[in-house]
Image 1 (cartoon, rainbow, N blue to C red):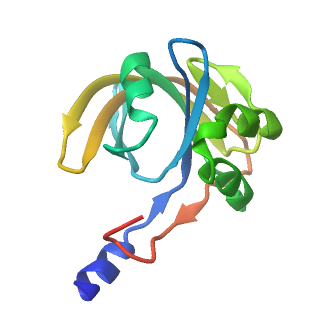
Image 2: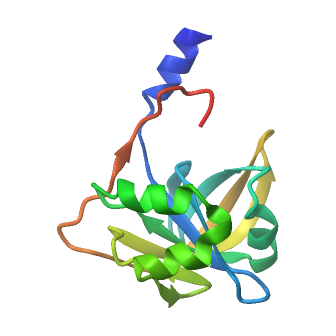
Length: 155
């Protein structure tokens, strides 16, 4: 299994912050890395989330979110939002996030994308969300963070 784990760990991904407001207007934010563009017309992404993530019920109810592309050098953003997802309101305020769509845009991000869930697929231990992107913005000369894992078999 070690060889398989190390081989899978060579698959390059980015780092992203998924944000949304739940039905009561409370903010939620989590760090994700399983994201890939899979279509042009309409612009479409797939995002894979571990089924036990606390944000899953809020995401399923909301059906829409904002995906922030973490910028190169943005490890501080990842630490701030990754350590205590239940304190999303405090972390988003500290980062200067602004409301956008059904979520929040981070001023430190390389880009943000406004997304709407069109389908959810059960793929075992994760949900695969197929989403359409309706709008977005990028910061010129701010490249995205490139991420690899230590192990391809766990977070």
